Length: 327
Image 1 (cartoon, rainbow, N blue to C red):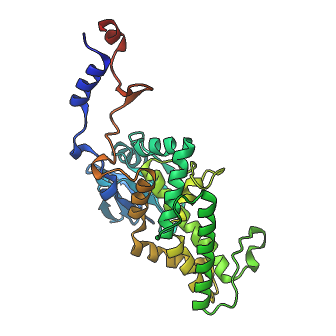
Image 2 (image 1 turned 90 degrees about the vertical axis):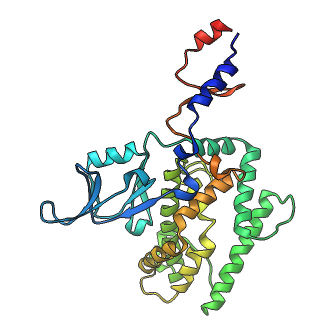
Image 3 (image 1 turned 180 degrees about the horizontal axis):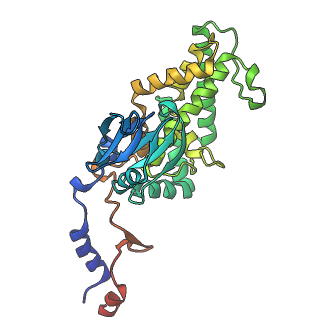
């Protein structure tokens, strides 16, 4: 008599992907930013074309099979055949702002693994696990020891004090008499340069984080600290980097005549120096599942499973009536 579990084990041995088949997101997730080009499909592959069609335009072929995310900046167009090829290779396509510092919309391929989305949802839906993820996010920002067993309210207080101290230190460094964080869209034009630069810089950071979250297949809406908006998880992850990216940049522009524009330009260079996109991916993996090893990070997205509350994942494509009759 063959049990469901025995047939399940036998099928897994035949169907399990090898390590060579696994998309190793942790160390090889590739992002490509393009602007002012036309992306087309020709007989050779997907290429980015610069210049007028038929006018001796330059072509650069894209390694579609090796790309996990393509960021389309201003002045970019893409044909349907090229988009279909990227989708077949499991590449996420994001419509981004200049320098990839904003994410307006995105297309996720149907072949994208749900591995990290499932981890995110399971942790978000359980209060104990959600608290653990939120705590790891706070601890990553602090970088030093905190009181054992600190509550979420205490962690929020510690974070608030840390930011106030950072504001004070940067104000002293740049000889600013007094600074108070203020974000008022109704009175945007009368705000001081630091506040204008910080608001613009944070928006850019949110775009980069949003692009990374989409490339992983996670939900931007399911936050662990923030909630109630489609960008809750974006805000959670972006807060990990503000102290070393957007806040110092904003204070350095305290005398700028056009702080918003200068903040965006400066951040593009800062993001390249920090190599922020791959770092965001690694940090998301660590806060959602700190025990993951590189070999466990992803599974083959082509393997569809059935869910069972007792047995866990079962293989799809099996007629379970036959198994029940055998049992």
